[in-house]
Image 1: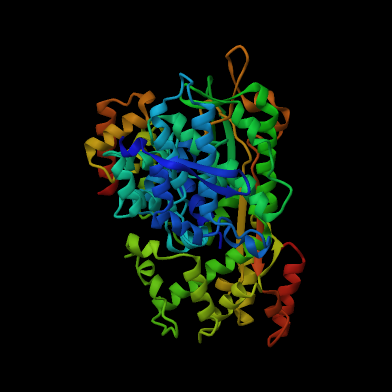
Image 2: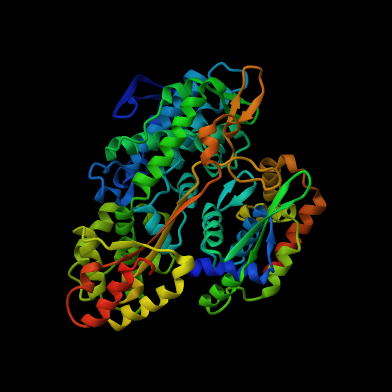
Length: 164
Length: 434
């Protein structure tokens, strides 16, 4: 019961907090693609793979008092920062064992920018295509973001690193 | 004349309770409607288990698919036709996407998907691109046409106006299902002035906007949506049936894994248990097949499977209480222990379920929310986000409402042995704070 909620709390605790709703969305998606058993269902939305179920779950966890949501003013824009509360740490124990084989994965993902994770998640979304087709598709759906060849290479290398 | 532009000798019309008539002139659309994969949608109910609460809600995904097609046809042929911002060459792809957008839904879609970790969108894509009649028809239009239709439905298509018509906060899909579900359930919510909305829709840049004069019709649409979610889609009794359905499939899967000898072997499910299923096997499933198994499994030796099937078929549903997981998750663990002590398996008979909805959301710079807001086109050509002009929409924007319930079989807690434990369980449930 509430196992799926506990997995999200466990991940955010391991990552020592996540800043940005988009970032959290892409992190969980990338981990799902690495076969980490998160159950949230994803679809393709404007900013790439997105899970309405994850949005709802995070909202529920804030309501339950297991996550805190703080608004960070970044000047021209705002971002939400999620951290695990004391009650959340207690709740985390219901999971028994972490779903993350390697806690470093959370750290690695958290060290990347939202833009980079958006790029990585989008490439993974089209991983049924070959590399050239993936890049073509990326430019169709994310044309406005003007990802450079270096960024794309870096994202492919990051995917390989996570898979190894 | 190419197949893409070929028209029927005479227009075909389907009588429809929501749109009065659904009009078909294109040979491609007519052929798609008659394909095996689209006809299969007649055997999948649009509202899953809701018919156990609203007895009229027996309508199928076929009805809805035709309805979405009709709305998009009217937008394309009547409203957008001739407007310089609309690319007329997208007409056929958007009509096909409208008709086929739900093609991958399985029987009792959401429960089936949850238990077997499936994704109906992925199946829609497989049907469009695989060895199917639908693919054969689409391929006759042009090379790459099935892929284009699949991309519109997957929301990865380059023309965002086309995607918006099928999937956005005000799209043909929602406009049809709200009205259709209201009609068949018999509720008075869900009605709004679609004619007005269609008349004020305009293609603009990479989106579809609404002329500001139509703002009140859009407000009505959003409130209808809000009411339908809480009065129909999230009805706690329909959710009870869905919980039981999920548990039947879970039990059958578990028994198969344990090597249980079924009197009625789950032949149609075997490839789903080990995830080796083919598209053909997926398409062979419909709600008739599932209901047949449930009827037959009512006499299985396994008491849990037999009981759950009997509950679903004969509508002996679980009762429910409100539940606050933040406060009560530890008590839930205690309750599960008591269920064990009472000889009732909590895995199948004590189920927490949550549901939530966000009626409308707007754009937050920086956070880049994933929902495209509804934009109003002002008389001076400016674009304004709906909640900035509408007080009523502003009041519910970005506000998610969640409901938590705990489901259990009340009558099992009243009769039989271990009365003291069962009494303790009932008291915990009655106290509210489970």
